[in-house]
Image 1 (cartoon, rainbow, N blue to C red):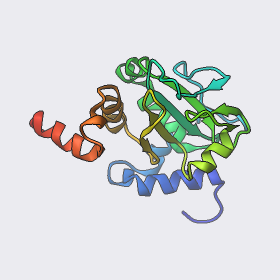
Image 2: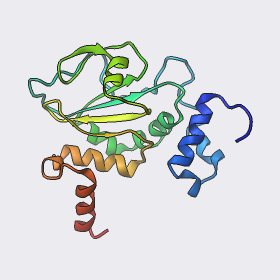
Image 3: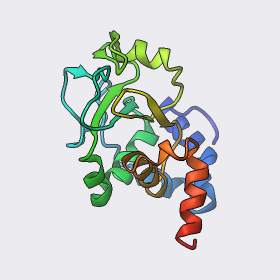
Length: 191
């Protein structure tokens, strides 16, 4: 890349390299997967029917009926656009998310939130407390509000669906390390 690029396109270039997409497709094809971007407005996030509407009362001190997944995103985020135009368009994955409470928060937003621990805060402050640095970041919590796993990188359908399976089957109780569980699962499936 030469010259000035808006932050959105520059971040897309970084995601392209870090995610290893350059090994399978050229940069133009990568950009086109989310082009036109799903959202152009400054403060809007990519919409999806899986997200719970506010108010965001995520408190889990009394165990909830379902696990919780929180998507921290931002506008003008190529990786967020790719997530929404790719994995979050998969019908099987969307069916799996129906077994969870699914929330989308803007990482820079002052949206009121009650965290799983019962703390009143804002999305921005909570993201800061969680030391989030990348969008999208996807956090999975159990019914008691304990964080199980987070994905803070560009994610493809295969990995996201395996993480959802890990959470929904409660495999984290026997395998606190996702990678060990995934290796074991692959061995059992003969992969």
